[in-house]
Length: 164
Image (tube, rainbow, N blue to C red; front, side):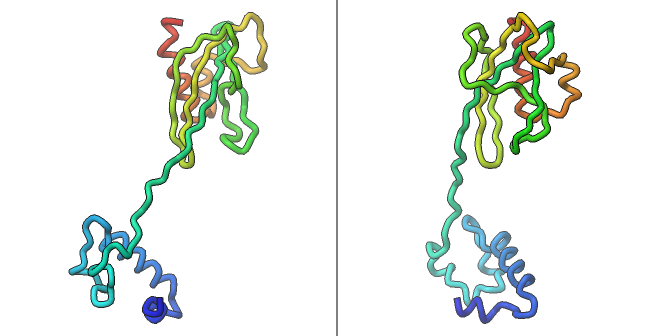
């Protein structure tokens, strides 16, 4: 710790910190360190005892599951515009707690976000009347602002439409 404090440039600490990060990213790598070309080789203790340096831990991301209902009426699919913090303003398919008995399961899609993995079980329901406010054809949906996961859900629906 004292050595590091002595080495830091008091007038330009940003430059020093950036240089240390660059050395760590390019020369002092865990699998293939370049000790021979490192400017800190004379004071480095890692050459003698590499276990002093922690290894990067693999991050485990949680998995979330959702049931998605595609409500179809007159060959159009119901969508809602999101108002919450997550995916705010984008159009999306309805998330439901429990699928309707008359709904047909057509498959699932997965999508990885930065902090979690999402698994969506997708169901289709033929509405007898216009239950929802906004219905769109698949061509109209392609022009809406939708998330990547909703695009995957739409593609799953289009892939199974010949059997639906």
